[in-house]
Image 1 (tube, helix red, strand yellow):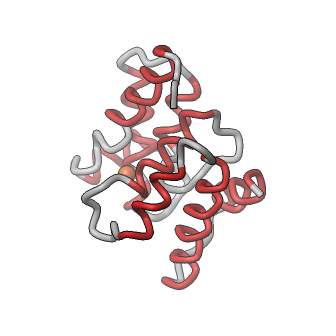
Image 2 (tube, rainbow, N blue to C red):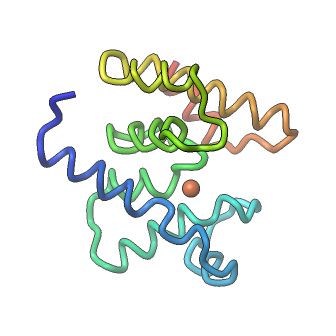
Length: 145
Ligand SMILES: [Fe+2]
């Protein structure tokens, strides 16, 4: 994609950080997250962002990418959007198939369009599963239409 080194480094920091606490004890994650979201599976993002900030990460875009990577965020910059895409499209995930490989191949040429398709799938799954749609997710969807 010809991304500048500095931006590439931001993407990589977000990628390394986003699931850093996914397997941490629930109590630890909850304490760090301080989130109003009542689904424990969503706490690892805010917890990782809080821990990264404590360790010296100051890039607001990187921290917001990590914090909201499971739910979406209307005010993301390129880091958050790319992490959201990568989190869904990375090869080797259980749901990865030919269709998602096609999405991933299209990211360099049309990341905004692929982002809308990925968000639509992720949000549709939440609706089908009967999960509550968070205000952050609805605002994210409206922001990328
Ligand atoms: Fe995650």
